[in-house]
Length: 219
Image (cartoon, rainbow, N blue to C red):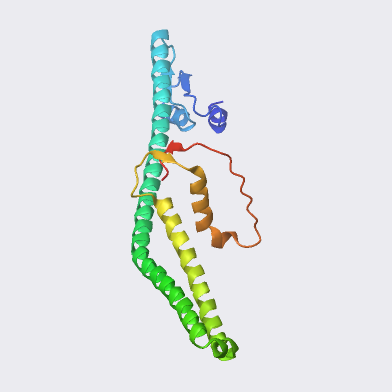
């Protein structure tokens, strides 16, 4: 009976106390090996039996409480480890964003200067040599290549700037831990960062409601 109780997941936690007239050590050891928690020799006294039952029930509940506490501690430990990992990731992202800001600013400034210089050069050539400038296919081709290249550079700069902005929003290390945030802005940042993984085969339909700012810890 004790063996069946211990083999069943529903009853295996119930402490079993043998009532026995056997006093041989081998018999007692055999009973304990089968899963008994304790034994009481016959003839027994009711107060002793009740005291043993109460003690083992208290041990059982204490063990269950200890296991639950241990589970909570493990969950809390995992949560702390995840928080530390996210904090480390946030610091890394913030460092990357900081390092990208300066060169990105320089590239944006130079790209803007290049656009204005090309426009000014086209205007000057068109004003001074209108017919030759308009009919020279080589010069027109060169300006087209320069213009196309400048637009590609501008598109790339805008894309990198968008990613840097999304990374800054994602890390949020320079902001208060709890604050009112725009959920839509967070979704857009996440979608920007996941853009390369989403690909062209997935169509994302965004239907945002008019939501109020949410007070939370955005990290």
